[in-house]
Structures are given as structure tokens and as C-alpha cells.
Image (cartoon, rainbow, N blue to C red; front, top):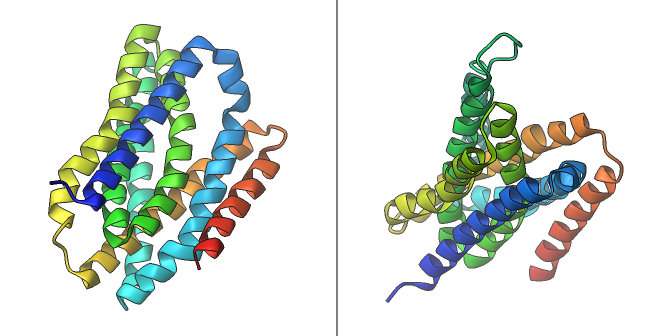
Length: 244
């Protein structure tokens, strides 16, 4: 029989896959609506991710391992450096090959989504509540991620069919794949080591919310994004406080 933790983490990563797929479908069928509202989704997701990390996940990791602060920094910097490395190869000039504008960011998003699957394994292993909190914010950011991946590929010169397929594989399917690959390795890990992994995961979540989602929201410069961010923070705070 499968354990409750395993079932929970598979359900969460599968939900993330479904939500990303919905984002891809919406932007393909309703491109104007998706482009208009994607900033609000990103702002709300950023509010949830940052709040959950600081209010619950980071303190929890500190309780589990005294070295957690160092690994929190490592998690943040690792994701920053990996994204900076990928961005260094993104072509921004008009005379560059158009496909590179879609493929390189797609690979970066695919790696990021695979790491999301690992984060699900780590957080649910700590506790169902910790996993649900992390999953709540992460699943919300999957919807705009699906939209962004499709748009990058389409603007890179791919037709709608190939853009849909590549976006699904990179942004959606890679998340449950990351969970399936990582869960057997994490299921028997010691509590102190789990604290280290949780701190690394928290650093990654803070990076995604603070330096990936929020700058994108600011670039969009849409109305009501600040309200969406505030609602995300409030929702996360209410969930954490009600649990205590």
C-alpha cells in the first residue's frame, strides 16, 4: 500500500501539472484575456510563496537543523546562479535566431519545474501541513508559468501546436517527474538532513516569489497587482495562524 505522504505528494505535483496545462490551454484559446490578467495571478502567487516561506517553512527548517540558515542562503543563491547562467545565453538581439528566444527560456522553466517536483517531495516529507502550504503557493504560480512558457515559444517562431506540446513537457510534465525521481531518495532521510533540504527549498521558494515573480509583475505594470499581492499574503497568514 502507498503511504499517505506519497499519495499526497503525487496528488500535489499532479495538480501542479494540471494547473500549468490549464494555463497553456487558456493562453492558446484566449490569448488576449490571459495576457491581460497574468500579472494578477503572479502577484497573488508571489504573496503566498514569500509569506509561507517566512512564516512557516523557514522557522520549521531552523528547528530541525542549526545549520539551516546557511543552507537557506545556498538554496537562494543556487537558483539565482542557475537562472543567471541560463539567461546569459538568451539572445536579446533582433538578428539572432528566433527559436533561441523560445527554447532557452523553455529549458530554464523545465529545470525550474523539475526542481518544484523535488520541493514537493521534501516539504510533504516534513509534514502534510508543510507540504500543503508550499504546494498552495507553488500550484498558484504554475498557471502563469504555463502562460509564459507558451508565449515565449510562440513568439520564438513555433506554431501553436508545437508551442503547446513543448510548453506542456517543459512546464507541466517535468513537475511530477521531479517528484517521482526524488521521492524514493527522500523517503528514508534523517530529520536533520531533511531540515537542510527544507531550508534549501525555502531559499528556492523565496527566490521564485521575490526575484522571479515580483519583477515580472512590475514589468507588466497592471492595475490591482498590489491588491492581488496583499490578498496572497493575507491568505497565507490566515492559513498558518489558524493551524497554530
